Amino acid sequence: MSDNNSSTLNSYINQATGLAQRAVGSLTGNPSTQAEGEATHNQGKAEHAASHETGKMGPIAADPQTGAAAKDNSNRTQGTWDQTIGSAKESIGNMIGNENLRREGQEQNASGKAQEAKGQLQDWGEGATDRAKGTLGAVGAAVKGDRAEEEKWRDVHDEGKVRQRGAEVDMEKRYD
Image: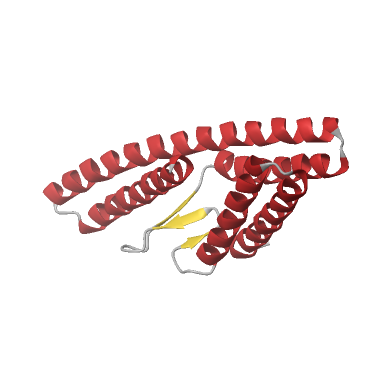
């Protein structure tokens, strides 16, 4: 499955999970479940929109200014998936009154959040390192007058910049 199709599928799952959470929250009278469902649904809608834009397709982020692309750390992708599945299990467990399934879903959701955060930090650190390496390498190549080498190092810099900014955007979304 291509990254775009995978991202689109994930957006649909998030939207459906959010709707289910909202329904469960509405049925049980639990406003926090309703709010969580609304947030998950909106996240799915945003992911769907992003998967159809040029520049960001699923786990591949691209800088809209430069067009440079960087693949997200696998922990980020797996963490997002675990959150989605965990949230669905929790909602279904609430709906059918299965405490074990609800608890299992909560644990998987929390584990997914931690895994995604770990991936974001790794991407941020690797991005910052690549930016610095790229800048220094490009300067060294420019001093030697090697244009091809300079371009190679600019690409390293640009990929690092995309990775770092992508992680920053995801971290900001989480804490807004």
